[in-house]
Length: 191
Image (cartoon, rainbow, N blue to C red; front, side, top):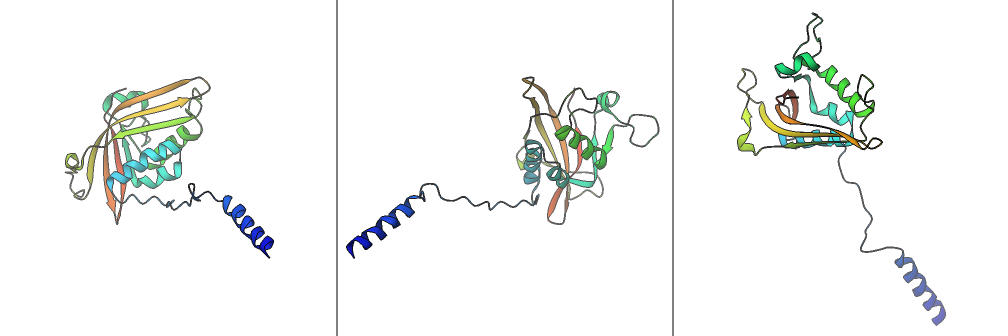
């Protein structure tokens, strides 16, 4: 009886030793749904979409009427003819933005000069809320405008190189129900 009891105790100790109390089992309790409950959360999710190169997260951040706006000096370099009138426009819409971003994340430059980056790092310097602005345009009374300094780094492991861009982006954020979306992304940096 003592031997059986001893064997049971040893077996219990052996089984218990397989469980490390200092490294408990991890459970993923994160929510895969992108909620964008606040303007700050929305911009943090923008950084996340770039870091993860996740076009689905990126799409969830943009309002269907999204516009990307260029400063005048960039139109001749990277502007596209959106409305088919033969002239480069200073903006593009949701469809073009998603296409361009998906291409950057997964396929590289459209001219084939650059492969997709191995790593993308977008850092936004989100100012304190007291520096956020209300959009003065009629009909946009609930919109928030947040100017952010940004640094964007596309890294390429094979060539040990990177492409860096920095400047100012002005985000026009639009609430819809209990979520926020980027309605306008105005690039105010210089190439």
